[in-house]
Length: 375
Ligand SMILES: C[S@@+](CC[C@H](N)C(=O)[O-])C[C@H]1O[C@@H](n2cnc3c(N)ncnc32)[C@H](O)[C@@H]1O
Image (cartoon, protein in one colour):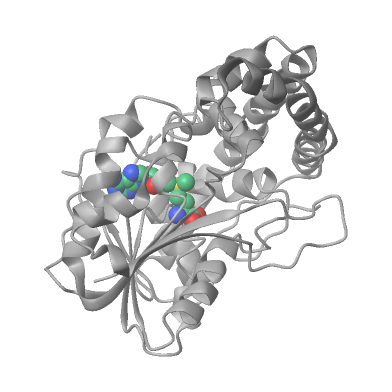
């Protein structure tokens, strides 16, 4: 796979940088396909039956699964390759972005406010649950700034996420957005949203589909706490000809009035927020939704599959995804009820990606959970 540009803001790679990144993507394909499959076989043939015999539970606890797998030689090898591949992802892309950072900062400034808008607020504090860790080994997470008007974390995310997802999210990395739109249209055919808010948008990969997904004339807003991702995301949206109003804000305390939006969405936000923050974010989403409006939160959570649950636990412990384990055990219906939604108006469903799997080694493996609730 070439890490091809789909827009003017996309960072370039020299021949050598590209070939190193291609190698890392191939290593990731190897680690998450055949090698991962071998680990699954060890889990299903040996570890899970032994745990079931010992505990009598159909779904052993995450901790019990992790501790049993830690003793398996296959898992030790797989684990080492996975963690190293993750670090190599950033080690390979980081220097390439740093090399061209002044040009990227300049380009973002040139594109600024040509359409849509960007509103930053230096008073916004990054919540401690994000600031305390290099999320999934991304140095400085989403928010660290290397200089004035920095776009580094956003530019780095655009390239690394493309490698990380191995082609599975499409060339614009927007499969989560299009999957949610398709699902919303099916479940809420009468909903014709005119004002939409995307929470935890990072650089807007999943936001941009909402500019077209419900027809013309829709006002699309997107918030995140990370200023450098928003700077890059706004410039990317302008470069891709889309109008989005990006704003630096904390999803736990939204800077919008009550009943302001028809639709509030998020993609891959739930697994990167603390238990306490998730509850507050649902409450805020309820507050800013108009009566009849819909919340749709999509994430890569697979709570009913024991091996996938073990994998999430592995990610939490060994891949700097601190909340990916605990989020598997959440009762989203109860969280929605606590936020104010009527239980009869809540849907929690697993869904397949919008993109059709392709007949290559990059074929899609993603599965999403969708939590939806109507006010
Ligand atoms: C995995 S990324 C989301 C990816 C993005 N939604 C997409 O589909 O490409 C998680 C994002 O959530 C943001 N985030 C986490 N907690 C937040 C909060 N309380 N308020 C706003 N943004 C938050 C992080 O800064 C990060 O950019």
